[in-house]
Length: 123
Image (cartoon, rainbow, N blue to C red):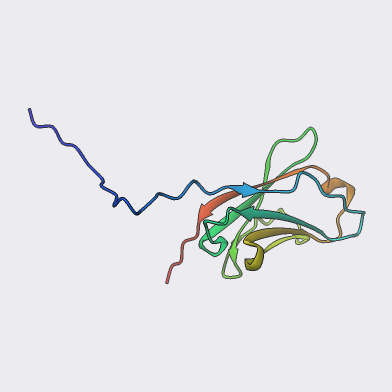
C-alpha cells in the first residue's frame, strides 16, 4: 500500500510564534452617563492591525450576546438591534482594541468578552 505523509521542515533559526493571547482588565467602574472604554490587548508578538476583534456582553442572568466586530472603519459589523452607544476602535500604540460604551447605564452592567479573528482585506 501507498502511504502519504506530509512533512514540514522548519529551519533551526525559525521558532514558531506562541498562540495570540488577549488580555482584558478584571473590572472597571463607570458611573451612569459616563463613557466606558474596555480594552482588549493583544500579546506583543502580534500586531492588532492584522486582526479583527469581536465583542460580546453577558449581563447577569442573561445569555452571551454578540455586540459587534471591529477591524477598521472600513471593516466592521454591528447588528441593527445593538444601540449606537456601542462602538469600537483600535489603539495601535497599546496594541489593543477598545470597546466604547457611550452614556453608560445600569443595563450595561455585566461581563464583556473579546475574541480574535484574522482580518480579511478584500482589495
